[in-house]
Image (cartoon, rainbow, N blue to C red; front, top):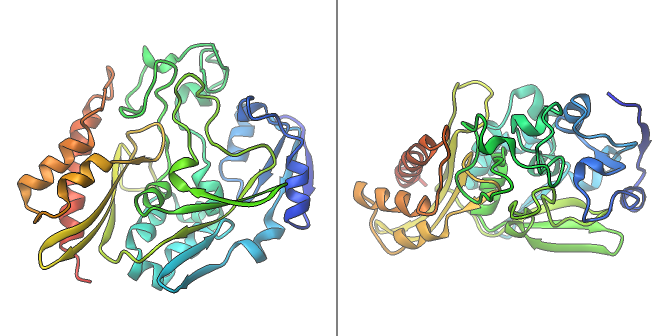
Length: 338
């Protein structure tokens, strides 16, 4: 690990002021001179690998008293960005009213990591692409813009089949983000100009021609909270992985249903482990709304979810696996007692 300076923020204003000296929006995150530190479960890992090389680390944990609350009021949920994953997953009200959120957090990591990791850091975690995380590979457009994508012709079993480009097929690795995008969450962002709120679906950027730019956050901005409108007690997060213990998804689905008299009045479907960004399958949702769920409908929804998928040499199996995960998640959500 390279030498770095350590600072401890005293309040939000001090934190964003210190972070504002980071690289401009057009530079890759790996070159940012200043990085925030909360749980550190991703940042420290990448610093040890020499992938991220900040000269200064700003500890934002002192903001936790203001940014870690869990509030369910008026039928809506607000989560502070510095809330720990384990605390949110264990909250009884979230388990009852938003089981998809509790499940996504519980399945996301080991207990030790969940005790440390924060919600804000979790949604900003970097890809697990081997070619990104191993600096001996020079051709990684996400780490070294313009150098090419080694995964296209390399081992790409864990890579994306949705939202890809000729410049990058790295998979977004998180789980919690799928629950957020499925439930129309918004994200609160604190910066030098104050606080702004955007749909969570606008936070992450697909790779396109600039895979090094991963989010719409500006230099000096921090995620301070998340909000989810309404309650979704009939919701599940299903994750297929190589092993049942701590592992990243090969394919996952966040599904939420509103069923009245056997008819699906509203449906939310999001996909994980298969896309370059948190992925909302709106075409699939349109197929199921107003219908009664059966095996045939579940299969049609799954087909719609992967209609634009494109596999490569080693990851084409994800398309079939992902369809099965979606169909199974639909049946599990429909069978829930609420």
